[in-house]
Amino acid sequence: MKLPFAILMVVTILSCNSQTKTDLLSLKLNSKVPAVVLQNNELKQDTDPNLGLAILNTAKLEKYAIGEIELNSYTFPNGNAADYSNLSILLSSKQRNNYLGFNYSSVNQQETKAIVAYLKKTYPAYQQSDTKGNGQSYFWDVPQLDAWIFTYQGNSSDKNGKNFFNTNFIFVKRGTRMENSTDPKVITIMAYYKMMYPDVIK
Image (cartoon, rainbow, N blue to C red; front, side, top):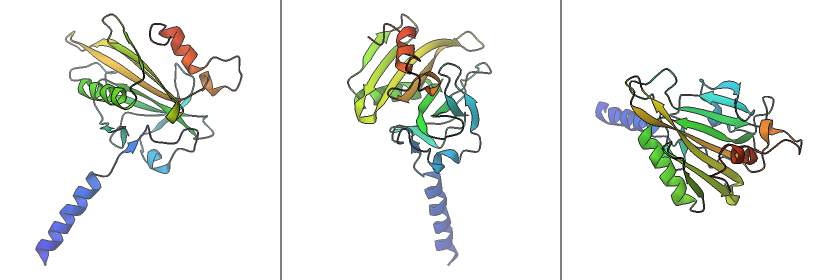
């Protein structure tokens, strides 16, 4: 009887290790963040320095996915202190955990290529711009998700001077304004990125 029990234990362990990750693209926007997302004990409350949105921030990525691409915690080899992948879950406010999207910054070069390829395949209508040596920038307006997706790259260097891309993926509810303001005089996040990247968003 010991052998079948041992086999059962192995199957149970494998099942736990292969649990489906939370697809951040499939979460319902402007609804309460599911409890499964909040189970990450390393989520820290903060404010996005560029968008002014309340966020839950983490570098522990094993519970999450972007579409079919599973995320994993990653630090660039021989990189500097800030050269690691990081996820910010965008919230409606610090008082209300309504999901507005995410901001994912990745230094994992292969993962980045896989995410871009997935987005281009899944949402073939997009705008693209070559940022003249600083990688690629993309913009998707996705009505079926009621979302905007912004992707842009910047150059970073490791401790030996080797260059690599730091890629940002911003997925946010359409119409969201800076700081999630309800004031029509406050610009939308799309207008903000249009100012920042005029060659990408026409």
